[in-house]
Image (cartoon, rainbow, N blue to C red; front, side, top):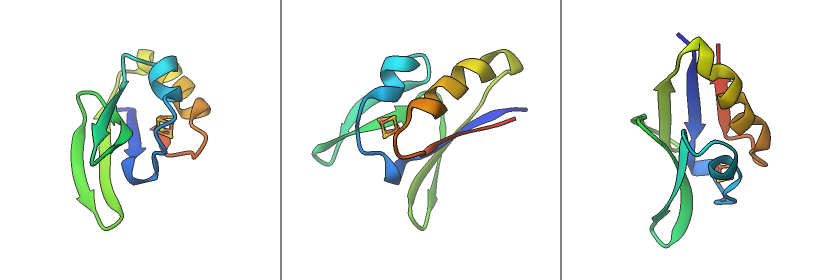
Length: 80
Ligand code: SF4
């Protein structure tokens, strides 16, 4: 099953993913700075920070890749 992976600790809060794909990403204030939050995601603590993952359907891959392509720091990944 395809999935979206978000390396949240790399997010610079630019809003691009929320603008492109609000069905997947919403901005939220965390510790005084804005961060993208992958909606309906599973959060896992890894040594760098919080990793968010969400399983998606094959039909959602194209939209998810739009979010992946607009992120300036490449912290959104779509695994098919
Ligand atoms: S596009 Fe990337 S850097 Fe910008 S808010 Fe979304 S996850 Fe963060």
